[in-house]
Image 1 (tube, rainbow, N blue to C red):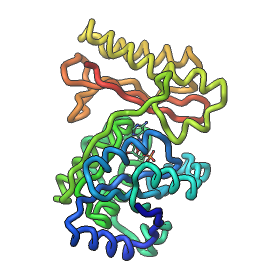
Image 2 (image 1 turned 180 degrees about the horizontal axis):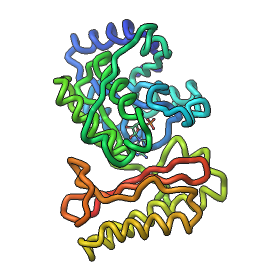
Image 3 (image 1 turned 180 degrees about the vertical axis):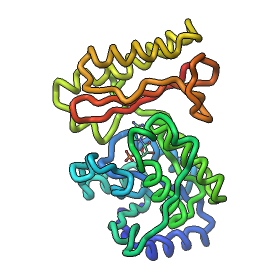
Length: 282
Ligand code: AMP
């Protein structure tokens, strides 16, 4: 194992080409850094399935909206590289902004349909930014597999769609959500939470879990149950709720009547922090 940081696509390609000549199977874990146990679980899935693991650390400016937290996004490269290599990453790809978006860059990958609901309308341009950077990272590394967390379930489906539509020869592997002991889904943004907000934050998962139980008991009541959940979150102290919805797990079609297989999805602000979470109904 090495702890080398690679910053250029040319160096990355050379190393990966060498691995390929040796017949190694390569896995990629894209991240925006601020590494936590959720990210490391993706590394261990990649390591179990592959001989070599690449993790990328790139805070992608094009997936942040104008009023979002790009400038405040936590950056600690040395610590991230240490955590990633300790967990079994062979190479950490840390490109600069110019390496990914050189002057004159003018291509956008845009996936329709799956991005129409949930976070799509609340974060205009976000999924175009994600789809574009992930397409680039996949083509730069050309891994056998790439691992993405179900924490960003809509993103996972968007990436599966673009890989299929663009015939990118990679298997996309989905990884379960890693949570704190109290149920809060781990996220780089959790560190923005004040102590009071941190105490309330696990209620988000609890409310979504209740929604799953309630719609199983009353499948025709999806809309009422989700509306009540939104109100409950506001009463608990959430500043605003973007959505609590029940959707088909493949198409993300919004379900007014629950049918298997579905997931409950939520996005809400606690103070200035936007939390997202989701869970299967069954
Ligand atoms: P990010 O650095 O937040 O862009 O996340 C990089 C990857 O880690 C994405 O595939 C996320 O879905 C995944 N991820 C983030 N948090 C978690 C978590 N709590 N459990 C599992 N995967 C996660």
